[in-house]
Length: 182
Ligand SMILES: NC(=O)c1ccc[n+]([C@@H]2O[C@H](COP(=O)([O-])OP(=O)(O)OC[C@H]3O[C@@H](n4cnc5c(N)ncnc54)[C@H](OP(=O)(O)O)[C@@H]3O)[C@@H](O)[C@H]2O)c1
Image (cartoon, rainbow, N blue to C red; front, side, top):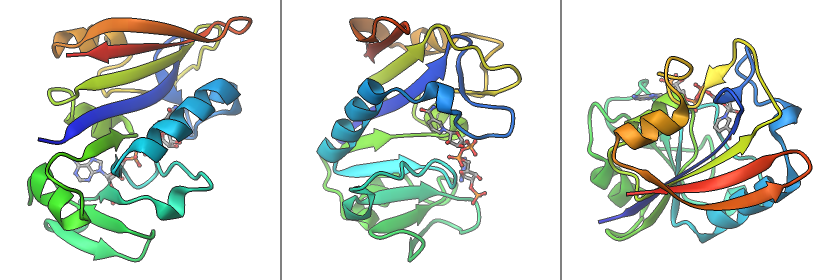
């Protein structure tokens, strides 16, 4: 079985991007970005949608599975190095991992956007929720499609995850990181 972990930073009101669908500068904090980068370096495969590429120096070395409805099931792509396109309507996640060259016990990092995060809610071994408690984003894009009707924490709890360790990433700007585990 693969180990599946999710990574995101959200505003106080649970938004991961602004009203134009872009992650704003106000959600970028060096300690969070360093944590995110080292987590992705430790992963065997990254999973994301068309607009959630992590754009880091080591991105070209990483295997990735990119969700799209534009293909029937699984296809290689030259859009990014080491990338496999996946439509969950036509192939299982295990089949996608195999096609991407990730082993049966691969360490998988899910990095968004909202629909992609929600797709794995019943499968996460851990979900790493960073939050900037002083930042509020009006009319933004919530981390899950049910945000802001529900908080991210309520959604994670509803899917059997529990808040475990908390790390302070930036005390002055009230940014923390909570690991939600099954
Ligand atoms: N703050 C953070 O930590 C964080 C994290 C992640 C993302 N973000 C930001 O959020 C924004 C992205 O949001 P987004 O909603 O556009 O996410 P996205 O990652 O681009 O996902 C949406 C795309 O993925 C594909 N997709 C989604 N669900 C699918 C499904 N069930 N089956 C097949 N394909 C599916 C679709 O591709 P096709 O159109 O090809 O069918 C769709 O266009 C970005 O600007 C990013 O910067 C922020």
